[in-house]
Length: 412
Image (tube, rainbow, N blue to C red; front, side):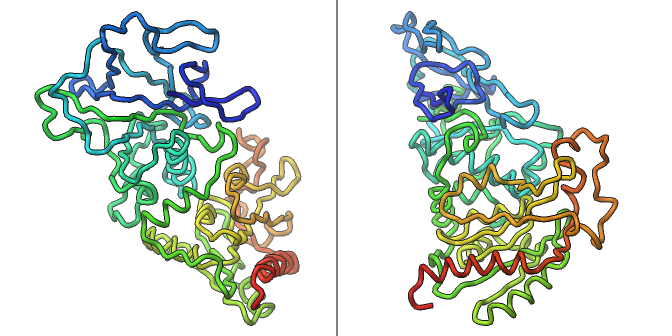
């Protein structure tokens, strides 16, 4: 069973029809087995049905084996774009002594170098895997995530957020109770006689589901994360709380604490908190979710750290800084393709102007030269810090966010 895209981009069940673009579909294979000697998945077909087509392509052509590029295990927008994969068809019944994995569902997905970044690890990997399972109505926190290929040169990046030394800091806990496994470790007890480990359902497909399919609802992802981590979810608080993320590294807002003092003066009855980025990195995933779930208004720089906003309570506001694109002379949002899929949070993009880059500590070393390959798309200041000059812009946006909250609470 596979899902793919119509020409208008809408989600459609493809059934036994195959799209020629493996990056735009996700498939469920039932009763497949991993051959431990070859480390390949076998798709068993009863010999009595050897003459029956496995599927038909979009041209109604019958196929009796899976093309090598039947589906992709990789991220469709990060080089090498498509990582083709297909199971091997075996015309015989599954051996009677075959052992089945204790996990009823396995997802076979590729990692990439970008998993060193919180946002990429969260959205381009875990959120995408979750959406695959949701699309096929197979999600269970007991599913097993299996590593396929790696896109890039540094496969160790998965150890930063997905498989860290401290398990309580693993983002994988948001959706799965099981650690990620390479294929050679996916061995069911008692699998030695047949030399295979079988699984009831194997899910393989695009690792960028939130962009390649029609707009997805992110609320089930948040709900699963809250339950799986045991975080406290009080809903939109009776008293508003403004949280400012003072990150370190690139794209930092260097006067974030000055902004916090101005907001505290404007809203004396509202709790205003500045969260240090380095301290946040030492938090467990559960602590991060608790912090977000108790926040009414979040103010964050653009970049990976801001994607933690997906765990804000429904009805909250996230004010995300833009960056100024010098190549296009406009204020631009970096994560808008992600945030467009988060339907329960009011995202407000804070516009910046060239003056907001003056007086920062990282210029000019942070600037991208005009001859760089990414300059025409991103401009020269995408990696630079900000120092907000006009506090009125921020005060106005926060005031509107607090008023939206107040309109929901008759006791305020």
